[in-house]
Length: 492
Image (cartoon, rainbow, N blue to C red; front, top):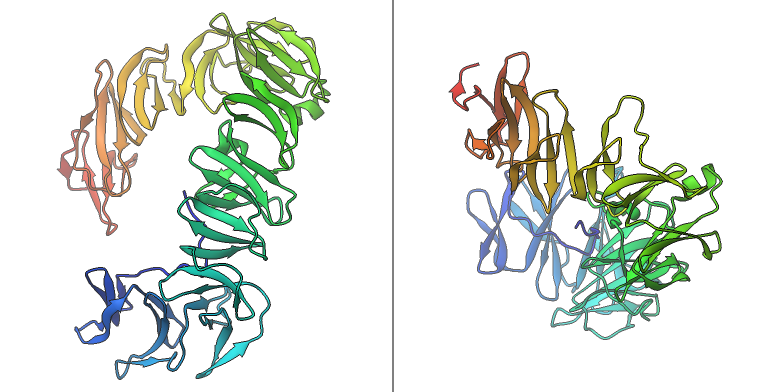
C-alpha cells in the first residue's frame, strides 16, 4: 500500500543527477562522484539525496548519526560543505509547491532546530516536538533540547497532529507528551479527506480509525470490503469516505455494529451484519437501519437497532433503492424494505435480461432478470462482452483472469493476469496480457480453453488501431511495433 511520504524519510538515489554527479555504491555504503569518475564523497554514507534549486545543486549525505549538507559548483566541479562545524542528526529540505522558497533546516542531537540563512546556520526557537537520533542511529522525540522519550525507535514522523513512532510491531500513534494514543500498532496510514486530522490505519486485513483529537478511535477490526466501505484510494494514499457513521465490523469471529468512536450499537454476537445504506433509509423513508443473521433467519433492526422484522432467506446481496437483493433457495429475489415481501422478477431496466451485480461483501456475480444466477457472487470483478454469438464474460478471481460463456459455463481457466479486451476478428478475441513493461498480445479462439501468446512480453502496452487494422506494442522509448493478427511484425 502507499505509505505517507514525509520530509523525515530520505530517499536513496542511485541515478544520474542532471548529467553532473552520480552516486556509487560499495557494499551497503554510498558515495558521490562526477560523471567522469572523480570521487567527491567517499562511499561512507547510508544515503545521499539530491536537492536542487534553480541555480545550485545540493546533496544531503547521511551517516549513522550525523547528516551533512553539500553544495556543488558545476563550473569548478567542487563540493562545499554547508554544515561545517555543525553536527546535525536530521536534515530537512523544504521545497514548497509554488517553489518560491526552498529552505534547509537541521536538528542537533537534542532536537534544537537551525535554519540555513545565507552561509550561516541560525538557531530557531521552536516549541513543537522534533525527532532526534543517538550515536546508535535510534530515534527519540525531543523538545527544547530535551528528549521526551528513550532512544528506542526505528523512525519518527509527524503527521498532521499526531507523532508516529515505528517499532518492531509497527507504527504507534503518540500525543505531544509521548503518551500512546491507542493500545494498538499499525502498518499503513491514510489521512481522511472528510474529517480533519483523522486517519484510517491498517494492519494485515484489519482496519481502524484514529484522530489527533480523539473523536475517532475505532480499534483494528475486520470490515466488509474496506476499499469501498472506507473509500481507500491507495494510489493517492487517502481515505475519501465520510467516517462519521456506523460500521459493520467483525471481532473475535462475530459481527456487530459500531460507530467511528467505537460505541457499540449492535453487540458482537451475529453470524453476519450489514448497515442499510443511509441514503436509501432517508430517500425512501425506510424504518430499518440494519440487518443481522441469527441462526437460520435474518432480523431487520429499526433506527434504535431493536428487532423490527424477522425474515427467512439464505444470503444478503445488497440494497437497491427501497429494495434489497437476497438469495433464497439458490435464486436472487427482490425484497421490499417496507413490506418485507419478496418477488422473483428483478427490475434491471426495461431491456436488460441479465446484469452484473456487486454484493455488499465486494464480490461480483451475474444474475438474470428472473433471479437465476449465471455466475455466483465469488469474483473480484468481471466484464460482460455481450455480442450475440461470440459474447463472453471476463472474470477476475483471486487476482487471476478467466473466461466464461454468457450462460456461465467456464471457457478459459483462471491462469492469466491482467487481461485487457482489445478487438474481435472473425472467431478470435484478442487481448493484451501482462503489466506495463511485460505486456504481450494474446488471442483466444472461441471453443478452445486456452489463450495463445502471439508476441514477446516486453511492451509497455498493447493496443489495436482500427484505422490501420493492425495491433501494436509500445516500447519503453515510445517506439511502436506493429503486428498482424498472427503476432507477426509488419511494416505499417
